[in-house]
Image (cartoon, rainbow, N blue to C red):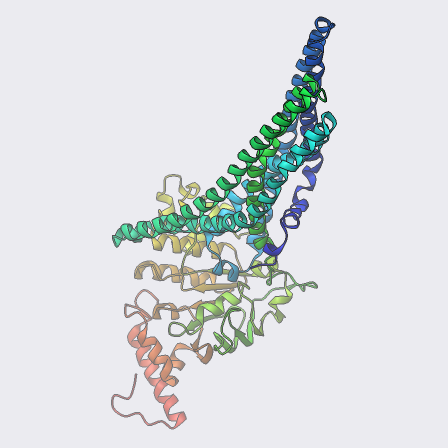
Length: 624
């Protein structure tokens, strides 16, 4: 349980002041207008007392008309005050909600990738939409009515005692159990309300995952399975909502029974007192009319308590995100790279996830590697060797837990994130596109947003298919680009990285979904782009190695060997094993500008020379 959830309800809701401060003047004005309406409603019974007592007197005819007009005027004043209250509180609270939603979104953008690895998207969506909407409604109505009704009850209690002390005391004492029951209700309802909001977030996650994975579910015929799973989650939420409803029903039972019982008791006592001459007929009418006015404020206790507890839980859930520390941010005294060249150096780099077990080995376990300006370095290794993790460390999607990464001699943690990510661009194997035009997707990180820059990036990525889209580069693609093929999405993601014109280009196997011919054309375009750009490429296919000047072999989070492809073939048995385990298709030759037979012969000669140098005899069949 977080520190926020241990706060009292008042302390938890008080945290909203930082966002609600601009709206406070109108909120206070709304409370004043509401109090005017409540006090006017309490004044009407006092006029009724005069009217009833006058009706039985000699001057009844002269008193009826003024009293009636007074009641009419008070009624109009009450209605006007209610109208003003609503006008004052509605608009500013929409601005509070918008400010909180913006703050939440800004926080989500700043929080590291490790945070998003842990949190389900449905939980974040429910906080950004449902919880903030609930807080807005509570500020506009729940908070205002809590203050207005509370003051109205206090003033009404004083008036009741003023009309007849004994009856007033009977009414107040009889109403005390309501507050005791309400306190017990808070303890039981709050737990169920928080569980309900969390379960609603889980349900939203289930819906989102099903929608995004609808192709997989249909392809494997698993619609019934996920339907059953969804229904179980929905049934859990239904059970929690019923638990809340039962708790509220118990409260409402007492809120109905106790006031009615108290009024009945007051009626008996009032009649007795009036019969003994201690209370006029007008005072008796005024007492019960005042008690009737107080009925809504008393009855609203249950609704307002439940509303307030829901708002408190929504506030807790909001601040759970807002209070999450941002551990990847700009340094206090940032440095700047005046003339970026793109030299990338890893010095004793270690990395492990924050929630890893103490005895677990680091995922990146002491990497030392230098990529010179304009050089293309391929990262090769079996699955789990740490290739993708290393690429994620360069733009600080994660931070190293040991050692340092230098860009042109400057520790990347000493650079502003905006500057670092201006110098470094990345394309992922899993291409993420946004519900926007092709143009805006490709130029997402580009400073040069001209048509020429867009055209060049699309040409390099061989994304000429955009010309066949309904509106060309201005076509809005569907959510996450699912209306496009995997290869088309990858080419647009690659074009996005190219358009950013970085000094360092990090490619995490961005060509995996391309056919051989398209891959060859993309590689030819990349060679032109990479001529002056430092590149770090994760190679899952041998054909990708053809792009590299040198290759770094990763093994269990460490750099086991560095050299050209031919050198490593000749000297590293581990490298030969890794290369042989990669995709066995026309690669390292066909469509890549390399003759495969020449490459094999050259690798064999290099292997023989390397073996001789190392004193290793090679017999028949000894070559890889």
